[in-house]
Length: 114
Length: 114
Image 1 (cartoon, rainbow over the protein chains, first blue to last red):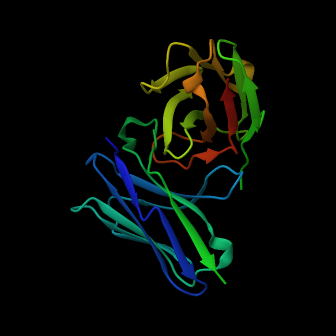
Image 2: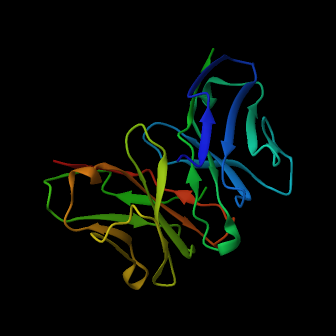
């Protein structure tokens, strides 16, 4: 049973367009949702994160929209650039335990064409 | 940003042998993690480690697995003996504090068990 689901599996957008990456989760105790960006041959790097008390988090061109009732969130990348081409992972944790075990989705491969 | 290093980047061994994966976490971090990613699958939590002890482990963390960080040096994952299904990319991560804090990932060790 996959706890965190991502769609689409892959996405191609033109430079300047907005890319929308989707994520949904099962566990209602999840309250922290980081998005990681990974380039080939590198480890995932934190891009942006949101906690369940918020419904939106913005950082430059990257915005997370969070719907707690539907257990869904999305990452919007506006004015997409070729350098944004990477794999994006949605993750979740229930950090009340204090030890922060992350549950990852399978990732969305984003290609931004110039 | 803060860097986590992993040594080696690739390892090929015969089934039944022992392997040690090394992680050099961010210098002032206190929490350490291992994740496993099989090709085409999501990254999955194996174990977290704090104050010299395993705090939580998943069902993937078999009896053949062990972790330690002797004298504040490398954080290691040892598999003894290895099995074919241990072939995967193993990512190390570290964070300064526990719940909800950013985990910084290394580039991964690609382990192939023949």
